[in-house]
Image (cartoon, rainbow, N blue to C red; front, side, top):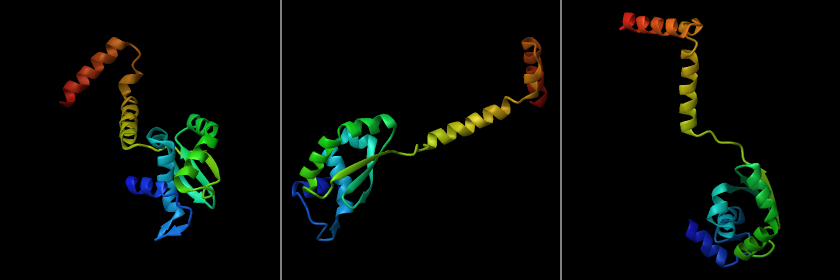
Length: 141
């Protein structure tokens, strides 16, 4: 799909619907082609609302950087898809995504906090606490 987006971008397509290809299908590929791999890895097209392209970036720093490059990005997009198809850009901070590893780590952390509510934690003297934990482990083994 990346190659098709680049090829269609090079043709400077201005029509909204050519051979079943709609402008909202071209917008994500036009974005990655216009801004490059690095910026595209930290941002993504959310929606094409008329001639306004709505883009989400992973944090506020990326949004600020994209806003500072807005004029250059619009020029590059109009070179890719043709002039007048996208006239304005709107940048937003994307909602944070919770990765599966983070969910597993949160579950482990939750288990650790429930395990830390052990009755041995109420023993103030560290030597006595250690003796208690050792004797309890031997008794349950």
